[in-house]
Image (cartoon, rainbow, N blue to C red; front, side, top):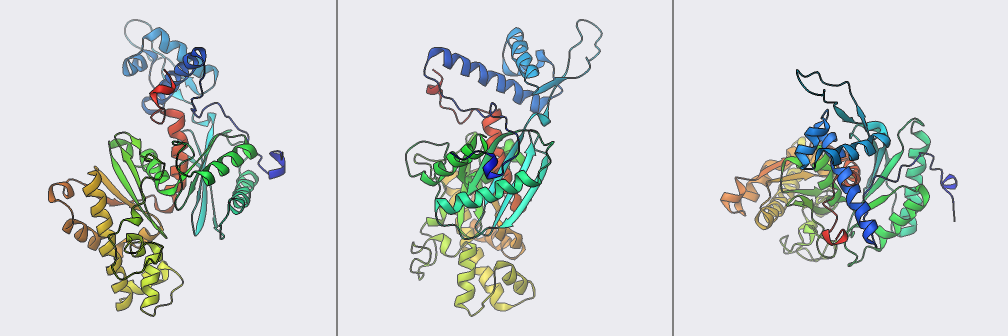
Length: 414
């Protein structure tokens, strides 16, 4: 078996932070329950620090002695540190605690159809390094492994040797991908293949998932998502995908394929399965759909960016194309709002760099097809994180598996 050095990976790894429940005995279950409580304390320190032990106990409804035991574990593991005691008029001075954001780092890799973006952050979400390269044609697991090896080598070669050890790696893939940390049914072969390979090469816990679902993690951890009980990310790239955050967790579906809104048959009637499915929204409401419309009208542009420049220069054909695109994107918005009634819907993806050409019309179209009481209570916006959202989402997914336990089934611990 190849060693880490042979693959060029040089960053240190800390593989004790990502929560993966694997218990067979009562003793193991008890230890895992304690570990989850310890991570709950760490999360409170992350979100509320500086904070005292008694304040942590009050927030989590733990008793103070047990909270202090868990804090001592975190101090020993250098995940938190103490500040100078707060002076109070009476009683013992409380000692504030803060999370040590430099105790570990997280790597998120977005293998997009046109570009691959890798972002390394510390535990506080501060970006330490960012890499971007054009994605080659990838069609087999072997292609993906070779490309990931190149990206890992790039990160290892150019990252500062003083960077914190990597606690986990998230990898986002386009297309029909079943989560490598979801239920075992479905067809997660590519995700599992890549997860096992990356873990072998780096020794770092790894999660592989669909790009739209990773975007949902990104919005939760790096934007406004944590303020909502439900929201949806409409991923408008070369294809059309959907990431759902419902009732406090990213929804993957029974087989791990939830969110394939591009296949909804609400598209143009005269397109004979351009992307494999007749009348699918993705045939028009996507980057590939925009370029199809351009070719059909005699505009041979290199990409959506070039078409957007023509539209901003008042080219009538280019503006017509974006108008048609906006109509079907509005139907996608309406579908999401009518089905899931989320608090917010966020448009994201590379195509959204041209949102000035379609966003307002998409809202008008969405309103036409949505129940009025739902539409006017739903916040609809364009992501400000631009093309970084997916790779930040891959980071956020790992963060979720460090600080929270919503991905763990209760029966795993009972």
